[in-house]
Image (tube, rainbow, N blue to C red; front, top):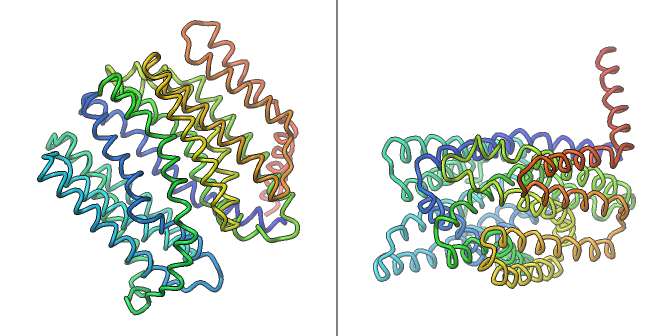
Length: 469
């Protein structure tokens, strides 16, 4: 049992180093974006960037999901997995290329070719880095993410600040980051040794697609949950409000940081431990600690929300602070949802993964069209919270039917209720809402005092061992 925790902790620590650097770099690029781009420019640029997230799963048939999951298996044919994935990606690049040229030359959209470049670079990066991760190159995988972010910073400084390239420079910077770091991954992880079209395996490809295709509606539904509200806000309220709402959605990235770090390590652990006989205690303990960390991070950020917005959002963008608390709450629900969603991948059964996300997406769209025309960005945030909550509940109920996982319902409901109250209070101005938010956070801290006590004893024991060494 201890080895399970050590492997998870080791992988989490490695991913933490890489992901924290990546997320912090992206996080602190916000002042740059909000100082050199108008709210309208930033809204359009981010919408184009985020559109990749809907086009990529469609054009690639989510083959990257299968590439990583199948690469973990002990009897994996890595060469065939890589070649199969690259073939699907190449077809996707051609399809998107044709659409982009039509978009540019027929429709006359100025940024169509920039979009194509970004798509090709992103798809290549996804294949090479996820394959490296599947090969067990955990440290290198984290390094590739850091390189991507550093390249993005240098590109932004040169193209956005120096040349003042606007939207085109913004998109090109991301293309450079993804493209160059993907090429570095292909070389350093020696993936070229696995490359060769003779390695193409049609039977294996069919098996990969059988796994990956159900992920398409799942990923599209997550896109609807995460990003469709921006398009609806754009339709009803214009690019200015869209830019504010988009800027606000960047701040919950601190919550997603917790997920992205843990999730990459957790995905491996669930795949390895899913068939072990003593996995109940392991899965239950991780859920308890993970949920506790998520609600504490969110509760802490709610307290300093306005301060963070004052530092990171310049000029007219500061008004986005009022959208942030609800988006932080939604992100926390999303973290818990992701924990349970990992089990579907481990079981290689994505049907319920797809259904749960689809239900959330439908509820999101319906609520968006009801609330956004009346409440604007706040309506979009409320719709996001509700949809993420729906998906979370569906997955908790379903996964616990498939796998034995202990969940203290009373404590779980108490923590999420307190967090919801804090998020609502943080949307308001005045001293009383601030006091309630702080008191709620204090209650969250002591909501699992036994876990804190256990952690304290563990750290004390570690300290004593270090002294003896």
